[in-house]
Image (cartoon, rainbow, N blue to C red; front, side, top):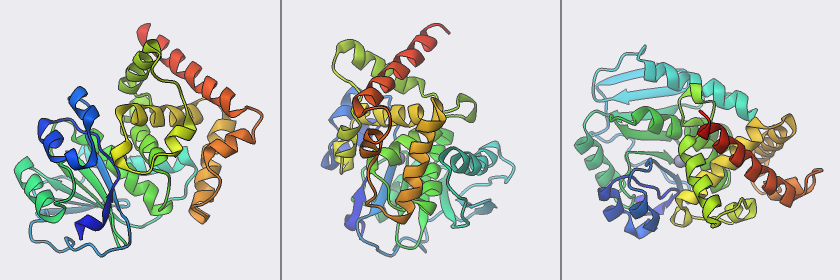
Length: 300
Ligand SMILES: [Zn+2]
């Protein structure tokens, strides 16, 4: 039953979403109408995918691209740039995060028309707030749903990243799950540099209304709590770990490796304390990293 699914995200870009998603809390949506909107859901307890054989699933085209099985309700060539891009993303995610590649399929369902996509989502996931795209992890299947629109490439990179990661690390903290997806949602050429998040967090710093705090992120348990600040900060910590030093990168990679074996392994905040840098120093370093990125962006 859809109600058994746990909502993982709450960000939105359109008025329809704001109206439909009030149940999960979305006050920030009203102040960020242009913010990218994607959603990711995971089962609270393992349930079968009741929608798995639904007649309204896209089925006109089916193609395999590495780990992805793409189902579309319109003609889609296997050599389409977006398909190749998503396939390449698998290697990028694996190499950046130090995770193995698996063959567990990630199904990607693409709807050409928004009305068919919305009708499908409303019919099979009525408890979910409307989104341009979303990820569902059932006990048997990893699935991405999206409809074709201007930002479909970004949305699919975000959701497919969830699929690739969950195929090898089924349980990871909400904030990190999203921070990683935000890192990889950008076009490959950006190398994870999320200018929208840099601008947002820089504004917060100038206002004096925000500073990095990984323990605050780790305390987040539901999508209803997630604001744009959280998504941006989650991305910022991930970017700092992956782009500043081999030691920081290893911290993240080792954590993910340990999470594969034991989802109750010590969180990153504890691991930071065990390094030469204190947690306060790490937070300060993240802030400096952000300020540098913002300065570079201003000088471009
Ligand atoms: Zn996500």
